[in-house]
Amino acid sequence: MEILTCIKQVPGTSEVEVDEVTGVLKRDGIDSKMNPYDLYALETALRIKQEKGATLKVITMGPPQAKQIIEESFMMGVDEGAILSDRKFAGADVLATSYTLSQGIKKTGNPDLIICGKQTTDGDTAQVGPEIAEFLNIPHVTNVTKIVEVKEKSIVVEVDMPNTLEVCEIEFPCLMTVEKGIFQPRLPSFKLGLKTKDKEIPMYSLNDFEDKDEKNYGLNGSPTQVLRIFPPTSNNEKEVLKGSAEEVTDILVGKMKELKLI
Image 1 (cartoon, helix red, strand yellow):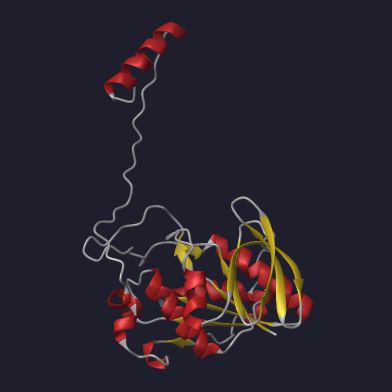
Image 2 (image 1 turned 45 degrees about the horizontal axis):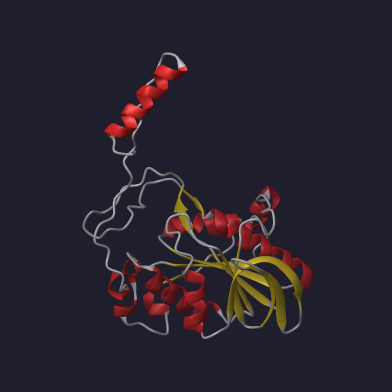
């Protein structure tokens, strides 16, 4: 059995600049970390790997510095990893990102099970996982909160729907996205870090893909048109009100009326 997990390097801080022309985040030179939701996907994959003796791979799309999260995944027990990196991938929306990842997955092999985190902290769309499955033409299930059973040709999972909990059985090959809290993610192992520090991490570009049409990647392949994007402005102004409860209440009511909140 072969499992693949999609992971992403995201900004480790909220102090991120935005390119006013392209509307994309300026990721160069900022502290980065593995997307927190991907840690739950990794832990799920690692537990299935241990139970079934599977091979576990990870794949990420990003600049060469994304190698850091591949190395981190090795320290948790991942067997192989690959980076999809090309200037032509820059500025991709969820559709172009999903398509690029689907092409990368085809390049690295045909996994039985693809596991993704619910979403990313820098996008919060929760669309990439299902769209990858659509591009690969495989079934998928989202909002997975529990692995019930891993069978030879399928997996049984519990899904958290808005009003119900449902149990689904989905045949391999398939994709699923897992919820935060499905398992407690493990910490990286120093021993595994030493053992895997020289492990090769292949990097694939557009020229390595089956589809080499630049119109399907990056900004060119993104139908989403961003009119304006900007970081939130911080407001640290504060005012301390003093007086009796009645006096402070009158002041608060007056300020709320001034701001037209009431």
